[in-house]
Image 1 (cartoon, rainbow, N blue to C red):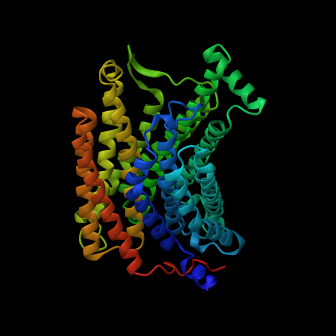
Image 2 (cartoon, helix red, strand yellow; image 1 turned 90 degrees about the horizontal axis):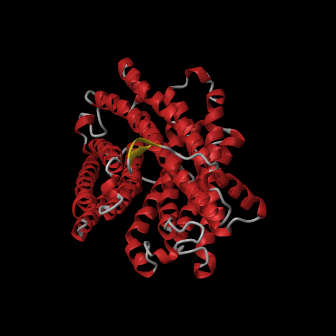
Image 3 (cartoon, one colour; image 1 turned 45 degrees about the horizontal axis):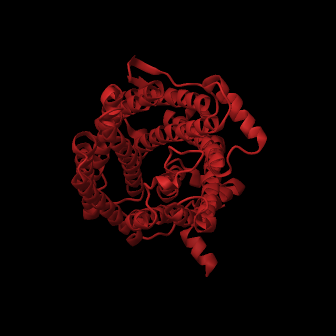
Length: 481
């Protein structure tokens, strides 16, 4: 019986369905969990990272981030043809990603929603999370190795692989490096500056910056590592999502001119990711102080924001090619792709990310005279808004589009999902802008919650379609070795 279940559900389609259902479930019960163990209670902060909200970070990491990245790896597995890999490597890849991934998602989810501190409930929720991220790391390494050897074992030349292939490979490697920064921060958060070699390294690294040795050096170092980890991880993953959108939306069939325009974007993103990794490694585990550009008093734009902003600039060229292609392309329902509500929803998500992150963000940085003083509450609200909505929810929503597109979502369900996405996105955006930039009214938050519920409903409709069309292997190659 067990072997029959494993045989049936040992595939990308079921894993995506499983991750989506768990993530929506975690989102649905979060208000209850927030009431019991408040996400924003400052008493739950850690002594070595006092300005980083431990509770909220754990919730996002384990409840949302892990299943999101596992789904992205499953999408890579299918669209890049890794299901064609035979032999031991293919077995290892499928066992880790689909077999262990099945257990990693609920373990991380349960740990994330109840991990108040590393000591809460005898530390059980905290320890539940470690196996989940171990599986994610192993899956990432297996996909990296598979992508590196795929051109050779598939009979294709490395020189003939497309630019998106190499950018996607860089994104996965870069995300893995960013994850290692996260482990450094997690170690200090839980164990402190021990053993002495760790304390000595931290103090010697911080001495040129702070000029003295004490716990302040440890706190500064650990928070720098946390910031470098998240600031590197999110734009790299977003570049990966953009690349996957291009591939899933028929990059191979794009015209020569469309590929030329998109190639400009892919190259810009490639360079931006390389520089991003260097900057955050140097500032995270080194003592490089990120300068402020265009400084005028407290106003100015952080250098790293400009560097990561080039990911957005590169994706803009890809967006142009995608829109160009969509005018003549046919969607799953047989009509123009440009008129497909689900496709339109990801274009809207793309545009909203531009508005919220670079436009709003740079505006606030250039007006810190207000936002670091009387408008500090607006700055804090914007920080949550752009992190939760632009960096997490919208890219996750686009990822569900990749899943639904990959597994043939069509008919009225596709339209229904698309319209729910569009409506929910717009409501959240307007409500979030009103709250974080104008009023701080709680009614705007309630409105945003309605928008979030509509998006979640759309996700569930799409997941229901996956279930109804069968969760057996989506490709014939999967599982064969």
